[in-house]
Amino acid sequence: MTLKHLRIFWTVCKYQSITVAAEHLNMLQPAVSVSIRELEAFYNVKLFERMNRRIYMTDSGAALLKYANRILADFEESVDVLRNTKMPVSLRVGANTTVSASILPDVLKVYAKKNPNIHLTSMVDDTAAIETQLLKNELDLAMIDNISASPHFVSRSIMQDEMIAVCSRRYMPVPEEPFSLKKLSREKLLLREKGSGTRECIDTVFASRGISISPTMESVSAHVLLAAARNGLGITILSRQFLEKDLKNKTLYEIPLPNVTFMRSYYLIYHKNKHVTDAMEQFFSAVEQITDTPAESD
Image 1 (tube, one colour):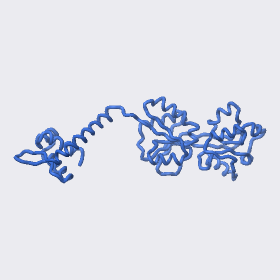
Image 2: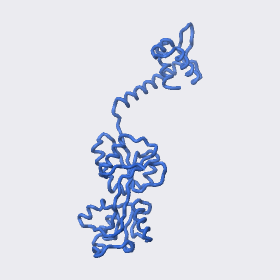
Image 3: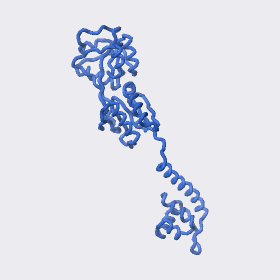
Image 4: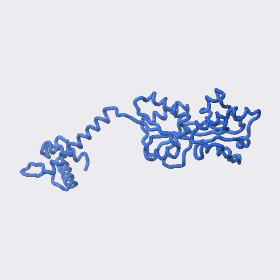
C-alpha cells in the first residue's frame, strides 16, 4: 500500500466513479480498478459495492477515507513546509578537552557569526565519550586530537600543533644550557592523563628515546596543569598556542629541548553514514578559516 493507492482511492471516493476518477488522474480505468483491488486485498475488506454500474462506499471504505484524508493532508503540509519555508537548522559539535582549550572557542565564534540562524550546540568530553555520541547520532561531528582505528568514522586532518615544555621561575631558574630529554624525565612532570591524545604524543616521544616517565601530577584538565605550573609545582607540556599568554607575560618560560619535537595532530571526524549537511560544510569552512589549512579526508 502506497501514497499513490490512497490518492487514487480518495479521488474515486470524491467522484463516486472509477471512470471519472481515472480521467482526473490521467490514468486508464483498468489501472484505477487494479489499485482499488490491491487496497481491498491489503486490508482484506470490501471498500465499494458495485450495483447497477455505480459504486457505493462501504463502512470499511468510509473508515479508510478518514485515514486517507488525514494522511494526504499531512503529506501535502510536509511538502509545503519543507520545500517552501525555512526550517530551523541545528548543528551538534563535540570536542575533547584538549581541543576545547585551544581552537574550539575560535571556531565556534567564527561559525556563529557567519551562521546566526543555525542553532549551534557543543559538547566537551573525553575522546571515547565523543566517539560514542557520534555512533549514537547524538553529535553531528567532532574535533579531537586522538582518533581511534574505528571503521565507522571519516576523519579530516585539520592542523598540527606544537607542544612545548614550560615551567615558572618559582620551580627553577631559566637553565643556562638546553635540556636533554633524559634530564627532563627526571623533573617533576605535570602531564595529561593516560589515554589522552596529548599524553600519547608525549609518551611516544620519550619512548622513541628509550625513556620512561613517572609524572608527579596527571590531570584531565589542561587548565589544572597550567595552574600547577604557574605555582611552581613542576614542568608541564602543553600546546604552544594554549600557553601563548603565559609566555608573553613571562609567568612561564619555555625549556629549550634541542632536536626534540612534541607535535600533535587535530582531526574533524563524523560517522561514515552521516549525510554531510550544509550546516556541516559551513563548520568545515570555519575550521579552515581558523587553522588556515584545508581539511583533508582520510
